Amino acid sequence: MHHPIHGEPSLSGPGAISALDQNQAKGGTASLRFAWMLLAILFAGSVLNYLDRAVLGVLMPQVRHSLSLSNKDYGLVVNAFLLLYMVFYIVGGRISDWLGSRHSFIFNVTGWSIASMLHALSQGLVSLCAFRALLGAAEGGFFPTAIRSIADWFPLSHRAKAIGILLCGMSIGSFIAPPAVAWVAVRYGWRAAFLGTGALGFFLLLPWLLLQSRKTRPPFAVDSAAARGPAPPHHVPILHALWQRKYLFLLGARSITDAIWFFCLFWIPGYFQEARGFNLLQVGRLLWIPYFSGDLGALLGTWGSSALLKRGLSLDRSRKTVLIPSALLSLCSIGTFYAHTNSVALLCLSIALFGVFSWAGNVQSAITEVVPQQHVALLYGITGAVGTFLSAISQLFIGRAVDHVGYKPIFLALGSGLPLALVLVFSAGRITPWKAENADLQNQPS
Image 1 (cartoon, helix red, strand yellow):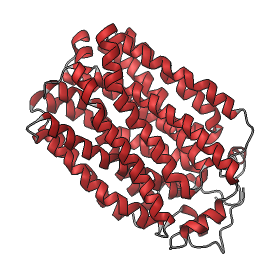
Image 2 (image 1 turned 60 degrees about the horizontal axis):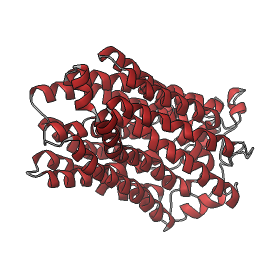
Image 3 (image 1 turned 90 degrees about the horizontal axis):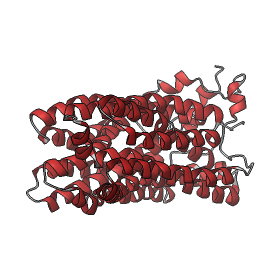
């Protein structure tokens, strides 16, 4: 599909939002309404995706005791998930770019539901690692698929809000996990918790198939058939997009964010049980609060930057105006360790996760904005894979640190992560849409 380059209004000045709406209003109101319905299913998928992966973190002390695992062993289990998740973040992104999200969503959801249920059959370290690896492979392709759907259906003026809602699903899945998993495990055992949560994914398939039965073409999609054939006139070679400075620095910033989040997901429930004396019922009753705060951060952060964009601020200023305070709020995670009471520790963690999710929504929106549309799922998938790789490397140190010196150095690193990532964001330069800055490249033959 031809996208005009020369003579377009500027996408980085005060009139950015009106220019974007004029140039991207292809699908009209009906397409946008369909896009929000599609997002509702993707949101539910995000909730269940994180619910299934969070189950093990909630049950970590019980599973470790039942299967005779050390903290070091638990780090290996987490890495089994992360390594396959990393690989399939890229593979899933490529598949989604090639096939489209319609088919890849079905494979992702079916695969992770089966893999999650298989955890109930774990007998030791090897089997738990194997099932965790399967879960990572199945879940890895979901977010590139979801981001591709958002990029295909939402104009730039709504995209950050859509991504913010998608990220809300992550924290909702995480804060649902402690009370729901604790309730099932206390009554029926930890194996039943994996069976019950895993089966929920199958309920997404019918609504998705019914919605996708409409043969409506996404208004912002790049023709996948054209992508498989000879390069179209404005085809952008993947390596040109991959090695641009802006993308690489944002990749680094997103990677740090992922490492912080995976620690919160896999280790925080265990920390409050082992270091602060919570029992499983207290985990269920109280530990949803920080993840709910993350939800609010994802919504308010992305909707706030979208509001600034509508008021006439440039894309760059809109995103960075939110990113700066978000990074500063994340410093409160250090207070989680030093707090003298559990209430203050929960408060500090809640403020920090508010900042982390507000940050994540805007950084991930920026990644989709600075890359060419035809490669958005793959390039987004690469950022997730690198973030997962950094998270996997960090697990090798977290388990050993907890076993030998405790959680103090981990929380100090946690608090310094986003301020460091903020330096990378500013080093990347201005956040501007790809076609506004790369018209010459897009007109070059590949």
